[in-house]
Length: 472
Ligand SMILES: [Zn+2]
Image (cartoon, rainbow, N blue to C red):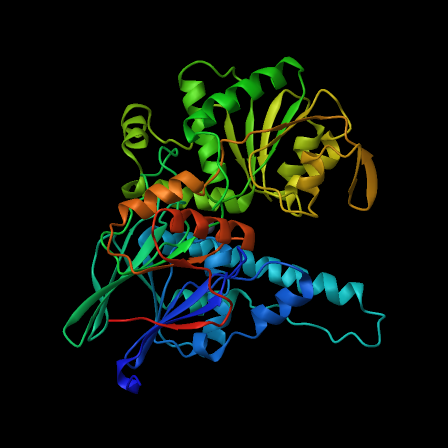
């Protein structure tokens, strides 16, 4: 029986057999460290219940290590602080800055959501009005706990545990969290992958696999799928735009505000500088994307050599003569009246809310226009119905004919595919005792477990709330 003082264990609190709500806890002796505190995004009732009722094991952790600024990894930190978490939130400096904007936007959405539901059910005698999950003040209090670090900078978590971040190449500032533990004379390394990016992605450096970890907790979003090579991103975009422009209409690109928007803007900038893109107006219609782009400009230390070289030669990778960031609602509405050709990049990425829905409503019934899909579209979203080319789609409660062209670009992904994940695990070295496969739908994680076992590597797919003792 292990003495209480010699605890060395992982508890899987979220993102087990699913891709949302990332949260794990590592216990080393009497200290507990949380890795990520993501928002659970799924069916409304389940999401509401899970996000509001954070487990004590999360709230009472001594510190939080945050891998990156996506909401399914950081989105519930304000709730954590609201419920009484008093530790520090460690992350890279770019992640801290991005989180400031992402969490503020999330607070705005929580408020809008609560208002909408309370109005919708105002006449229902059984409806108990709900409060937003958190507000901007909660975000401010949460941000005060953030401690920014450089990549590779070692910091102390407890007398026997130290940590550092390495580049995960997934979004700006993204990291794998490495925790080094010294217990009873043994040194052990536990690596939490965070989300793993792809090699040769624009803007970002390639992911760096952890060196000689003993235990690996890793994502498996695409544990059994392959993407088109990321080098094709710019060419795919160019081909689609060239064809779309020949029709003379508008090009509507629903895009995630973080990373995908900056990738597309940078690709268009490169095409423009290479004189391949004609002088047509490009609008980024998303205040959040604008704020995040400003964070990108401040964090050139995260760029790859290609982006640095571009910056040296041409200046700002995220600005060019035909590009306008649209902030006010009035300016956004004015775009409806303007004739094409033009390119509009707008959030949200799955067409479920935000300004993109207005642009789709105004463009979808004209066959001169083109809708360009550059990101994953979950089931039951407007984006998915467009990808599947339903002849009629419902927008703001009205059925509309889908006459616009629809083009799907498959080279855009911020997640490693199966072979890239296998490359990453091979590069970790041979001393890994166990891989814990998380952040994947069950079929993806289990298929990847099979791929690792074929390579004589040990792997398990943990269940939610499973506690696993590690051997030191
Ligand atoms: Zn992510």
